[in-house]
Image (tube, rainbow, N blue to C red; front, side, top):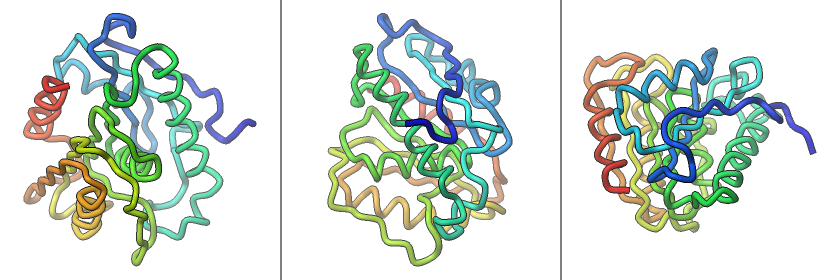
Length: 210
């Protein structure tokens, strides 16, 4: 069955899958594309990993803010989650199971990475949310009965991000903790909506332990 993001390209960099230590699924933000998020690959500097960046149709995973009612972002949100699942299924079929896969996203992509992990709980190599939070309007409660089995989860965000309220980052961290993840949350004063060198250092350490 096709969906809004069906068959969009997945751009790969880094090591070949059959020789890689693991894989990093890199999920771009709104109005961007694989080329944008893949700019982090040389900065991370871990060439023994495979980096795969799926493309959103029309460069946007879902149309409205991640904190709007779910209906405003459908059917695109469900399609986006399906697309990430397809990438993970393909990796598993090629010998890279979820426990060797890091889901890494920025902004809209960070929200999608975290939401996917919460909706499909298992042991992942890691989840990295750079300026993002779990998806849903204020008052959303996320099911926390699933187990993330000590998956390392990193949430980094500014204390004054125009798109991502700090309260939602805090809420998201608490959900991951309740699901049994090993959570690191870092709030950066006046950072803005970008990726910091401190976050990159954490990602490197996460990959080094994979």
